[in-house]
Length: 546
Image (cartoon, rainbow, N blue to C red; front, side, top):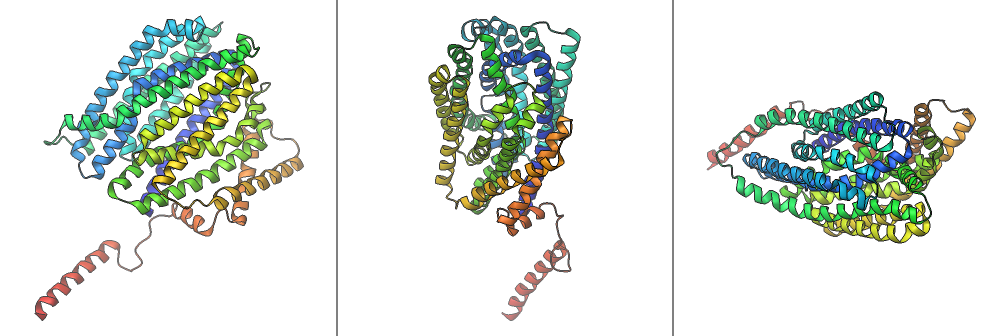
């Protein structure tokens, strides 16, 4: 179990570092774009993101999770010869749905832009979005494969390259062409992303083909039809549920600016307010979640393998550890953002309402992060259909609340909608997990002690910073100083209050230690040989005695 924990930890650390790098670049990119093209263009781009999200759901249709589950189960059951047929069927599946989604978006871009989004400036960018759909669908197959075989660093390398290319290509296009209107700016944003997706597609293909040939040679017992049916048994239920949820989310994103206009905002002000939350505040809120997301993605094959092999004790142990670490981390992040929202908001987006929205949304961070980890555990345990039912209920409730609250409360109605939907999703997911895997929930250690520690840490940090006086002029340096000081104090208070116990510290430090030799003077291989010789000697002695 310790060896598996180390493997999971180091893979998660690698993916978390890559994801943090990408989100750092992404948030910095958003800051540059906000200053370059304005909040209205950011709002319009986010509005189109709802439609693109539905097209992307149709293009992938659950194939990433399906590949991860089937490859993990085939290897865990001792049938590696079934991996290649699974991957062949998955490639055909992704190609078909990717092309279908691209053709539908190309054909419906004009009516969607004019009738649904009610903005003619969205038609051309939506058509450009269609170019990326087949590429992303196929990349999802290879990403799911790398996750299943515990080589996520290959997928991470492609994602990092994609992010760097996206930023470079977009900034280059904006500099060379200097768009004079919102529509042109959005088109250049989409084109920059398309170039990056093409690079990611080619890089993942170059990493995938030799990996598959090396580890999963062609076998005589391959059966494409059987593996295709098993793959469809996972992907189609996920896909149909995802279509419903994505359609509801798209409707929600269309209704938000419409509701803001009905509450008294002009079209420009509505897009600006929507962009301030969707494209500025939420990326900052979700920035530290890169670590949780990376860890959660790796939990799916670990849970699937443990379920196939009957590792009930290991599953319960991992659930407890995941919840404990997720809460410790997310409560610390929430405390930092809540206490220093003004510093963060003004450093990243000066002169906007971002700091105000960060302060409002920060208490939601522990709920969002725990929900991410819990969903991954449920999917690994074969509960992906239940997860999609919960997500559909969440999206349906969001549409109802947006329709009712935003025309009356304005942007505050959207904030209330986010809170209610996230709470519902998390409560239902946690309840389901506790039903299928009963577990002792240590609320005092996992929640109350971290809350007490972060309150004390932020208070002490603010006191110490007030003694220092002027914060560094560099936004990055100011944010880093506030965060680092608070988190160091948070860890110290966790140790003092028992939020981190000795057993937790020993477990964490053991993940960084190299593997130790066996307690005997003999090496493990020699010790095993000695045991075998002794066992043979006992058998020979029994024969002689007879």
